[in-house]
Amino acid sequence: MLSRPLRFGFVGATVSAVGIVVACSSVEERPPALGDPNVQLDSSFVPRDAAVQGDGSAEAGAEAGVEFPKSCSNTIKDSRETDTDCGGSECPQCIDGKACVADTDCKGGSCVNKQCVTPACTDGVTNGGESDTDCGGSTCARCTTGKKCAGNADCLSGTCTNQSCGCPANMAIVAKATGGAYCIDSAEVTKGQYNKFLTANVPTTDQVAVCKDTNATFVPRGAWPPAQSPPGGTNGLQYNLGLPVHYVDWCDAYAYCRWSNKQLCGNITGGAAPTTDANDATKNAWFNACSAQGSKAWPYSSAYDTTKCNGDPAVRYDAGATGGPTGDTAIQFGYGAANQDLGIWRVAEGDQTGSIQTYLAANCQGGSVFVYQMSGNLGEWEDSCSDTSSPTAECKVRGGSFLAAGDSTALRCDANRTLERIPAPGANPDTDPLRDVGFRCCLF
Image (cartoon, rainbow, N blue to C red):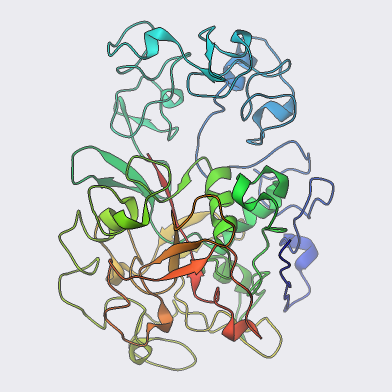
């Protein structure tokens, strides 16, 4: 098993009040809860960023007078469930597409090859309780972005607006080069958002198979917990929760996206993307969003501009430099003698619960509307690896970072960078290969 040293530094004496997570490795070792009304001390409750209902409709069952255990709505596949929050002897039956072991596990009453499959949900006709062809309703799989819906529960995103499945909060809709659309996080996942995931205390045993035996913790191995205050400043924790999380490996990123009912961006229809399709806008979700369906070399233009994004030290606003967006770059210190956030632009305004209020850095917008920081700031993990089953496989890290030093090639949408899923740590935080790596999620 690979080991990952944890480095913590903390400024201020209010940690017990806000409960920033500093460790997370098992259900039994529950970290303190963040001061968020959606985060409770009950170990069976898990908060989610995306407003997605359980696939077994536990909420609908409760409304009908049927009570299910809290484990049936915690977004974790527990031992008595056949899929996450559904199936088995205690939870609601599963909708189509979910795992099963018997017909009784499925709402449609049919378990084929260990997957719920209802003939009426695959006949190419809008019938029964479906809101669109072969999706929506109480039995069929949830509908993807752009499909018709009658309510939020019909949509994979959990968001039905004007009878059409849209994107949940903090995500932007992206058009596909081949028609249709999907959702992508408006910016890199923030420290505040990631802390909600850690506070949920998802067990490391619930990881995807390739990570289960090698990723011992989801805690970032640097720049964590978020600093409590800047030098001589106020509301330091709130400020730092708006910085993007970094020092996270591929397995951490994948687990967060899975927990939030999204996916680490990969293939444009969902799932992993072959590395050979990395710069094909018709096949790769991250590249399609960055390049405006393959029409731009950088998200903002076909010409490189040093003033647009955080990839050139000459225009960074850190430790007294000038030219960048004042106040949006980490100048805080909270990790001993070093500032492990130095050079990174803050991506969002929020509150001390980690909730997003406003996204920043409009000067680094594109290639889709309301999508930011796809060039520079942090490189972003992608579900595109040289081997889908090897823990040491090389995986794509997209978009360049603040360490690019003005190298326009490294900051392009089609830049080619890879790292091992869990790379060996550096001699110190400044030399760690994950220092400038974060991620964002997609939803299809």
